[in-house]
Image (cartoon, rainbow, N blue to C red; front, side, top):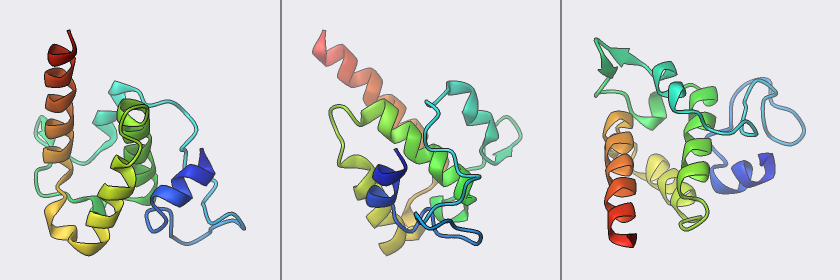
Length: 116
C-alpha cells in the first residue's frame, strides 16, 4: 500500500522524518479504513470543521484520507485519489475535508441505489 500511496499522492506523504521509501513510519496507509476514524479529523462542535482543507491536515490524516479513498472507491475508481491529490496541490483552496466526505458518501449512496 505504501508504494501505491506514494504513487497516488506523492506530496501528501512529504514531511520531516521520512524513510528511504519517502514515507514516515508514523503514517499508516496499510490499516483498512474504519468509519470511526472520521472523529480523528479536526472538528468544530459536532461535525468536521468546514474550514479545514486537505492541505491543512497532518501527513497522518492525509494518509488516512487516502486510505478512505482507496477502500471506498479504489476498486471501481482507482483514479480518484490521484485526481484529488492533483487538485489539492494545484487548487488547495477548493478541497474542504467536510465537503469531500459528504459528497463522496452521497455518491456511494446514490450509486448503490442505481446499481440495484
